[in-house]
Amino acid sequence: MKLNTKEIMEIIPHRQPFLLIDTIEELEPGIRAVGRKCVSYNEPYFAGHFPGEPVMPGVLIVEALAQVGSVAILSKPENKGKIGYFGAINSAKFKNKVLPGDVLTLEVEIIKEKGPIGVGRAKAVKQDGKVAVIAELTFAVGA
Image 1: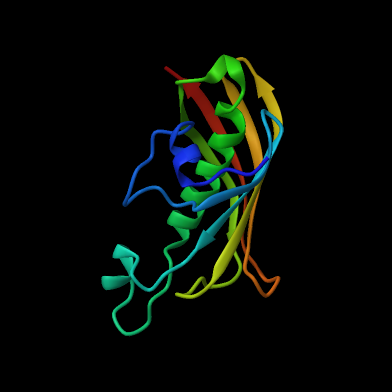
Image 2: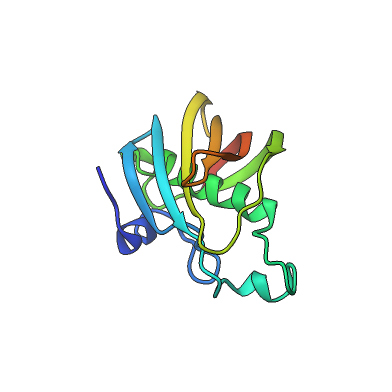
């Protein structure tokens, strides 16, 4: 199942400039999702991170992964209209810089879920196949 930006915004509450995913390329509700982020030089954070050498902040890559994970978990019928919150960012590793012009594939697999708490295994990969970030993300589903 593919989703465009409008369809993503029907599932998660994020909006510009903080909606950090462009499309969902694959979706298995409650199980996994694969999203895409086309990193443009016009991103607002590039004005200050860093002038003359723009680099996407690692925390925003993790946030983009969390948004993809939120789409996966909040697309379950029983979670419709709810919000996914960070519970923890576990073992995040930043492996390669993300620069303007990069296209990130953001993969999140839900590996554990108990009540409103769950864990997703997350990976951001650049268009050249280089891994930018890997992490384990704990989330809480709230009203």
